[in-house]
Length: 247
Image (cartoon, rainbow, N blue to C red):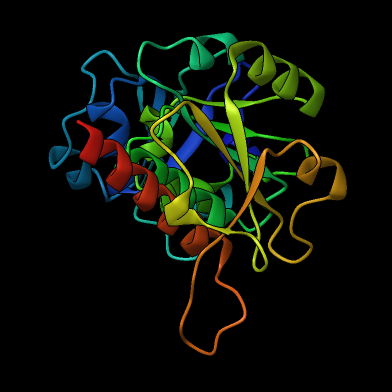
């Protein structure tokens, strides 16, 4: 069970833990390489609709506990194969692009929450630039609540992304804490990529230079800035509001 502790197996399968994530993975149509259940917890599998052909391995409690990441494991885990996307596949979908670009988000809770918001508000893809925490991180997967299994996600280099966006005429908006244009004044109905920076340092000058516009969320309260995942979620809501209005 070393693959569970590592997060990714030699074959490229990702480890997931807990009944909720296993259920989300099954409902999302992911392929299960193996299912692990702690001895004495076999009844948990009865509550789940899992692929009938998946290999189920019952392991001793101490072995299971040593292999999983969570402090209070739920007794079930699995190795699953995540969907694999290319940048071209994400950018060339039929609907107008609404992309979220992570410019170095390092908090797994933030990344997972943002992926969940991106799916909820109709984003067409999620791009992870270098410095972004791995999608295979257990906290990312739990915070995404299954959205990481369904929303097209890909990790790419900066030059490859910006060249591809430019070729397709996809505009780039950078989220900044202050002195940007009001998000409600920018047209999100056209193909767009929303660029979000690191929790502490924000966006690097090189990334800011790629943006057509800098957007700020108007805040009447005495708060200087929002959590990265909250700010991204608010901007995605604005994009969904505009696009819904057009429809």
